[in-house]
Length: 573
Image 1 (cartoon, rainbow, N blue to C red):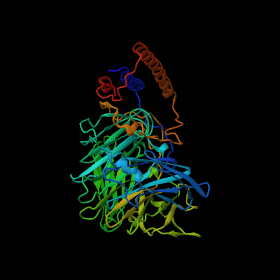
Image 2: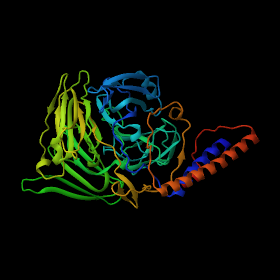
Image 3: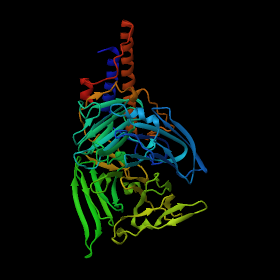
Image 4: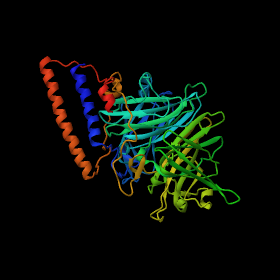
């Protein structure tokens, strides 16, 4: 072992030791307020199935801009592409993703995901739409300061010829993360490594996981409390019958809720599947849906544990209300055609993430291709009619109505509605005279003859869970306690020095700092002070020892950053 690699290993040992001394693991500050809109984003586009074709784009839209326009800059972090432009407060802007700079990234083994940094001087939303071989994929990108270090990873259940894929990207230096899966998972490019291998990555460093089953609620964790980006999706293993691809960005574990409205999207040749993914053991799930002619409701109850999933299907005119005794994840999986030609995946916003914010958006138009667009709104039943949808015109706007849904007459607490949209620019929000407690969320869907996509249109991204102890989560109101790890799993540490583009050739400059302005109690402050003291003393000891060895031998022999096989780290992390 060389002196350089010994120092690197010992540094990781110190980090592990501090975690043991503190006896707690905060994955975010309690009760933080975050959103799906902001001023600094990193949009990640996996290139496993090929390059984005004509029609692929980033949609940039203003959110409550203080001025009539906003200045935006988009930069490809692994190339020479950049673009500056101005967007109007009432009209989104589309930026093409079909650019030659991505070709080099797609030729690496495995393909390097494309990363775009989008910054603005006003709050904006960023939506990613990717078209590949007739299939459509879309998701809402989250701002950098809304990211977190702990996620639940789940995907839709597909036949054997399909592959579920998770792409993880680091946004800060010296980021260390690992995946604790509930299904058989391999690491692309390192298939012989254990799936639980701990990765060390620099800014823009990445890793890709694959499974021929589905991600069953595995835990993705950054062990030093740094934010990660996670993109999950499913596609066919080959393009022989079309990729049938879907993409979605992982939502932070702490943003998941306990109450959801499941509203199937209407449309010919569409099949709706809602997947319930528990986070903690003994999660009691209750599903209530509609009522029959005799007045009875469809009412079912289930108890689910981590690593289990439950799929529910609804009639296109039916609204389902799903509640859990603990926060859980709800995915909406959509299939187009029989046999399936394409799929879409979107995380359903829980009632805890309903918003009062207005959002402006545009329907997607593809050259020479007819796109059918649908919007679904979710809200407490008593406030569903307070949602305003306006089609923006040159001189004024016209309000549109939603179809009445069964939930309003069925006595449910949460309802939903959907309607088809004509091509154009819209603003959705609440009427100015709506009650102060009125809230809502919205999802946009689109389909062509061969593709389907979906993404969140209106929602918040606040923290719902403030702590968990012995598999019992504590919601943020009332008291807040430090979050502890869900489980302790031995992992193997590996920093892949061969991924030069991962750690050294990518620079992400952010205008905001993730997880800033943390508020902690006295106990946490004391623990942090002890930890800092331990780090400083140990760090000085390591520095002194390394300098001593350096002056003795007068040279450093750099052997790379590969920490695999260090038994001390393997045991402690």
